[in-house]
Image 1: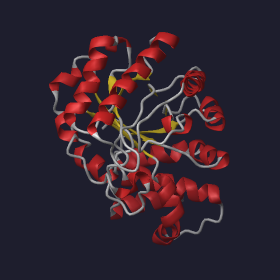
Image 2: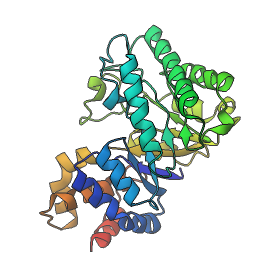
Image 3: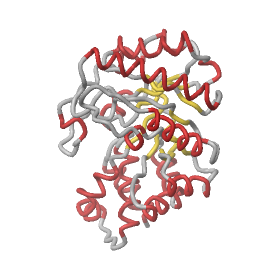
Length: 302
């Protein structure tokens, strides 16, 4: 794994405090031999403002489907023209705000509280392709733009890929494929996504990482919101390019007191606590929290 992104979704001040302390993430990277740290933003005005004020820090742009497509994902998805237009305009405005490591093309997840039935999944795979094609026809190709594979089984992700392969000019897009509908596939008591009904199903990863069919134009895969234990299992695979996590929000909400006690510090400022949560998540999701990890983290906080 070459890159790891932290999805900052807190208040404006908390998010900016994390980004402004990027040097601490770099120290952790050097001392613990971690992948390059970056931040995964969404087209929210305050986050885009922060992103433009720190142009030298690696950042990527999520398409933020959950923010703009306000439909019930548990039943058949029927998105309106107004939803699509607003979504595309906001995404493109954010895309043009700065140079991003990548910008995720619009996609529709194949789950709600749980993964939907096969017929609906195939419909959403086709819909995701149509959104990709329409966005590219509207705004043009750009090497920042990253296709997002959708599906539940390896076969479905391959269907998604071949729609792109046959109808899009993949050589003109970002050379890494993103893999969607991943974040709910975790085994965590803190997970509210998918109501826990989709947890632990990561058997799709090995077939995708080892599929020669997917790499005619691409160099690897990015897994959106992949649980840390699966990152640690597969991070050394040559085609595991990057991943991200927004779980620092859960760390901040549920674990921060125990973490401060563990490293022997007391933080009263909420911004500092949120920064600590993201530093922990950066380590936890990539190599895990060992005694050495705790000691390095403690030294970084001084």
